[in-house]
Amino acid sequence: MYSSGGGGNNMAAAPTSVVVLDRGNNTTCTINLHGATVVSWRVNNQEQLFVSKQAVFDGKKAIRGGIPFVFPQFGSWNYGPQHGFARIIRWHVEKAPERLPSGDIEAMFCIVDNEVTRSMWNFPFRLSYRLILREKELHFNIGVYNVGKDVTFSFNLLLHTYFKVPDVRRCQITGLQGCTFVDKTRDGAIYQEVRDVVTVNEYTDRVYQNTPQEHIITNVVSNRKMRIQKYNFPDTVVWNPWVEKAREIQDFGDDEYPNMICVEAGHVSAPVILLPGNAFEASEILQVM
Ligand code: TA6
Image 1: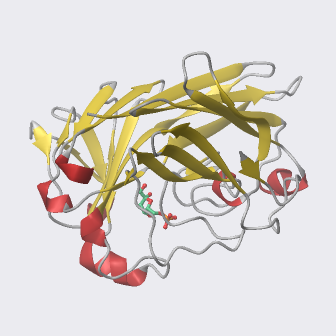
Image 2 (image 1 turned 90 degrees about the vertical axis):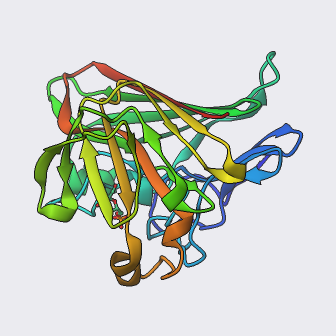
Image 3 (image 1 turned 180 degrees about the horizontal axis):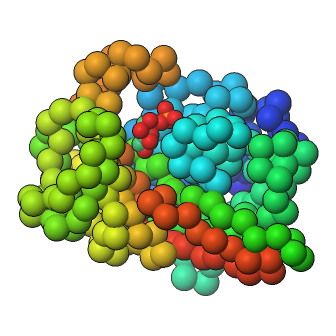
């Protein structure tokens, strides 16, 4: 079932437009068409994603929490907003939620270039986003298409996932040992990760490069584990604003940083180069263990 405030890919669209995938058994996934931002994923009535109590739902600002969709730029940008335009424009419902023979629920969303996107990034593109809600898993399949005839373009792509956690200090992330990372808390200095499990006990903002396909985060909701599997996403970003940065972020509560951790699958260290007529595909699976 979904309710939409009308189609159209414009920044001033109704902020209340959400699509809900309902698998039954209190297992649901809710997508806000503003940025196709997943704003809730409940497994047996347990919320897995963090959304700030201060998050703004005005159809303009990026939603502070859930899974913002970062494209075509990761980080600051000379031509447009930080982290690109995909998370702040309205997406189309390409396929309304439908139950598959497996019992899982599938839905698809898309955006194409328009006057607004071309004013920042003058390229013809199509971006499709397929979500599948399974019993304890959420699948993301992304397709980027260069629909032009003669222009090559390059882009970054990242799923900026905010996981809800009882206490971030008790979380451990596997699969980063030996990886090189850019530490944005230390002016972008480059280091190598020596720990077999990464913990977060301070302001953390790291872009880990060429990471393995799998990570496990321990002590998420109900002290369970969250498994991340990623394909064609060579990088992993780990972020927590901690005390000081939390105070600086308007749409983030000063006391909320212990209850979230961002572990983000992305293609950000090196851009994807896409020739005319070509497609790029990437995917991610989140699994509650
Ligand atoms: O993904 C981590 C990061 O790039 C951090 O540098 C921090 O800026 C965070 O994203 C949030 O960015 P935002 O633009 O949503 O405030």
